[in-house]
Image (cartoon, rainbow, N blue to C red; front, side, top):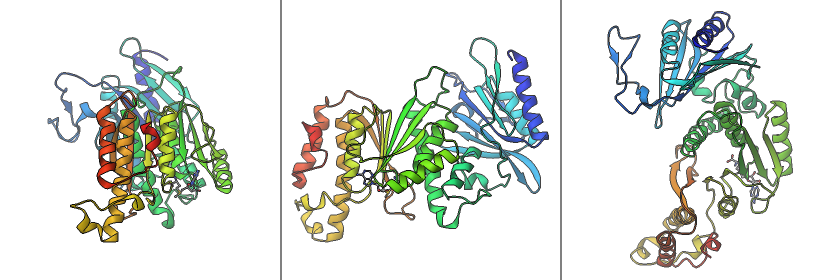
Length: 418
Ligand SMILES: C[S@@+](CC[C@H](N)C(=O)[O-])C[C@H]1O[C@@H](n2cnc3c(N)ncnc32)[C@H](O)[C@@H]1O
């Protein structure tokens, strides 16, 4: 279906899904960012006021709506995803429908309505007629309408299946008490990965001939975060993606593959292998979360060798560097305390990892993964390739100077210097 009627028909499908209680979610994406001053948008809540401030609509990348009940009255909970924050507001159904109607086509080129009967994808190209296409529904069960579900499941309705299959949530979608931290970590991880995917240019709606993104999660354990990464690309960003989890333990590989089959996770598989040697294709992204000691360095090296544009590691224990560390002045006075030495060794291990990645042409960020009140292992290093590898002599000199200052003779990534 094409033309203005495609937009009308999309809005009718939305209204019908709300009337007939088969609504799952709406997502507006592919924002049309303007270079000039932002247009004023009328806020349905504030009669006559022009809403310029609380919602920076020109900064909105995507907007998501889900249905919730507030004091027994259905509302559309709207989350505006901006580059650096999410802004949530609950609207009445009429306000929500109005907002969507006003912003379709003018501010967002794509819209996806998910219902339990059929999904509807609206595409409004810059030139040409809008098109509406129906698809088989991705979710056949209604999500919970409870108000706090967004906090429980930041991933949205299609995540319910795999969160349950992996034992993170009960059948009703509530996280198991023992898995509450893991659940929180998954939410935070997806949020971070979403921002990194944007840095890599992977968040624009994929065309049909878009090449498949290839991602490996090294030392994936039970695969909780591998499923989360797959979910982000497959469900949220709707990119063709192949995700492989690499793990030494056969039992974990078997269990994770079983769960993947159970929820029909196309493009997700787990293989038994070593981080340093697993057979992998050229990659777009390599991830290694909580891989012990120098396994993180092996992962970084593999990411560079396999040409990954994005490398994400959350280092675990840091045993290798500590015996290497000297006591240079003026640090000697404090390094006689074992605890300080241990912490400094951690810092230097991770700091050197960022420097090695920069030498390999990546731009790096050190991010707090989850709050340090949940785990001390909360540092994540994210690296996006931006420059020619091994060409910046100043980046190499920084590594050598730091090693020399602390008397570090050997580092697991030294081979990159050759
Ligand atoms: C601490 S768990 C982390 C699991 C997962 N990445 C996470 O953060 O939730 C580390 C996992 O890495 C696996 N592992 C450790 N060394 C490995 C290696 N060299 N190659 C592949 N897997 C490894 C372990 O068996 C374990 O399941």
